Image 1 (cartoon, rainbow, N blue to C red):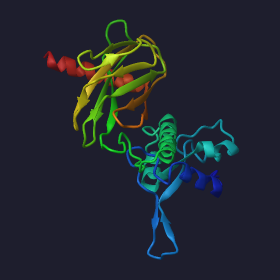
Image 2: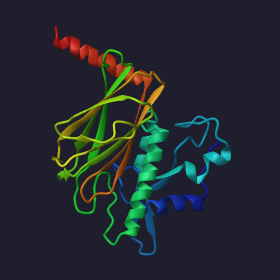
Image 3: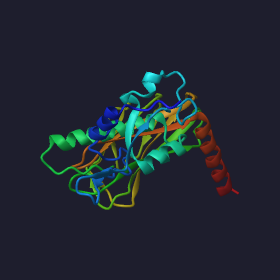
Image 4: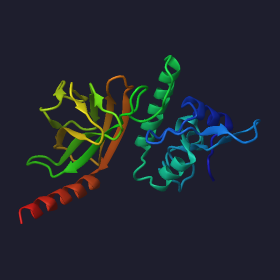
Length: 261
């Protein structure tokens, strides 16, 4: 039995993001004109963040039927992204979809609050087309650490980004080491904050910092807020399970061993 959303909630989900796909790497319009001037075409879907049925993707068995079909459990996507997130629920986690939804609704609100034309795209703003993406790698930890992660910021857009500010919140308390030649670090505690007067050109990535953890939890969650000159803050979430971190550790150790043989 599939618990679907009421039609009025589907329409509300769509309107709350300006009828655009909530995936920040897509953001395509989901409605447009048909050949018949009295009709419109829609390629949008009200997707479930946690599964609509007990065997579905991202299933949360503790939810009631009412909770599964509530508007809080919905996200507006284009048909392609709706299929994508359900076919790879290991990559497209509950936390990630919730961050997409929050970001898309925030962008839509800013769009109606300002006098400028509104463009909804990840890492883009109203005058430039830079696209800043945080990249997180699990690495071989240092002595006394159970896990170590390295953070880079990559510009995947077509314009230079400058006056960049970053906030990073982690689910665990770690020991940070940041790239002093490019970034200035704020308070040395969570959420970690960084800013720079430098710039990142298209196709370039810059190392921000490493953070090591003595804890060994089931998972690590990293929440980012990134902004640059003239741009709206963008939210991103990255999550590593303990097993994923250990797998990357082994790969890093193998690469280091190969370099010394």
